[in-house]
Image (tube, rainbow, N blue to C red; front, side):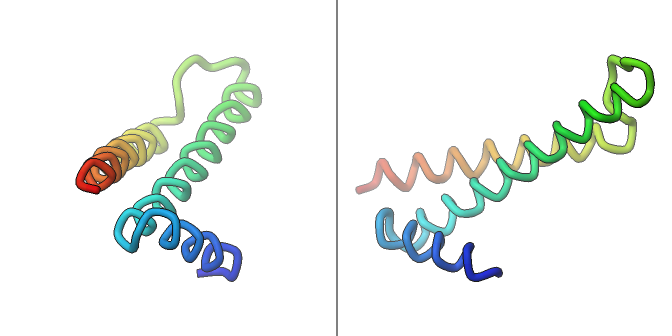
Length: 83
């Protein structure tokens, strides 16, 4: 983990508690990964003459990341509800 992430994790843990802080950092990381993947998909479409579908090798990755993000969001909301 890079120093920037360590600082963010400490801040999240201080604000939300240990487990919720961990989930918040994972949620940020998943959001960053999905954003990077979506940017790649835009460039892929432009380079290949305005294709309307994502590359076949990246479509499953996009779904996995979106599903993982949804589970982390659900867990974080459940943890926040327990307080």
